Image (cartoon, rainbow, N blue to C red):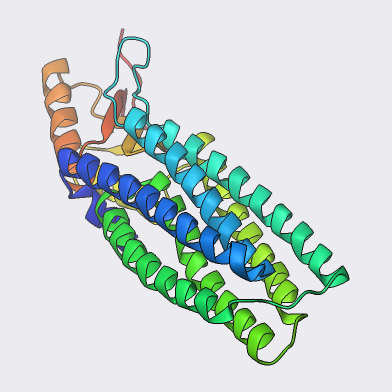
Amino acid sequence: MADVMTARGTPTAEKHTLMRTATRASLGVAILLLIVKLVVWRVSGSVSLLASVLDSAMDALASGVNLLAVQHALVPADHEHRFGHGKLEPLAGLGQSLFIFVSALSLCWNAVDRLRNPQPVQAGVAGIAVMVFAIVVTLILVRYQRHVIARTASTAVGADSLHYASDVLMNAAVIVSLAASSWLGWTIVDPLFGMVVAVLIGRGAWKIGHDSVQLLMDREFPDDERRNIAAIVKQHPEVKGMHDLRTRHAGLQAFIQFHLELDGEMSLVHAHQICDDVEATLLQHFPGAEILVHIDPGPDQTLTE
């Protein structure tokens, strides 16, 4: 909730800049870690390190898709897309969840094969060094992503941050696995850790996919935000009530619409001024939101002929 309120106070231009920078940074980190891990995996043959390689490959692919989606999502509304292009963000998140889930299945397959055919892990020290490097770089990226999320409430950056945060845990697991396999000779630890990481990756994919689908289905704002909207509207002294509140998000764009109950005897000009006042107050709390208000006579009134 705090992040959402902070994001609403951020100018739109700043949000766009932060989102573009965050998506480019995540793609750059994914490519860097993929190259480094791939080189060491070819030497070590570790399943848990292969898990990390596959995850970085999926990260690079997902971050690339994310970058393109965010670039298009930030394009202003046009004649053919009057509500903007914001839904490309949750679409990118849904695509990421599919990529991540596929990587989890692939990892499980490799882990099961290694359980059936145990092999010693080579170059354990080099693998551990790479994982430590990956943890440090990923933590820096996640910290920056969370700053961007707090300022923008971006779904796409949030999805990116979720699976990069899970990478930190996965990389730590790989370090334990490499140490146990290389120095203690416990070869079974390597594929077992690979399977555990696969489950964690799968859970992350489910979370990202679920949140993306909710946005694509135009889920309402949280209840506390809806109550806040009603309270703001009803604080105007001439508002008799409101009903049929509907809210949704499309990327960074928030949409709010409701029926405003006013005195049925007042002039259209006066009613219009009250609508403007209510909208201006709402925009102080929900900057940049698109607000649609329909005027109705008060609950105990009917329109006169």
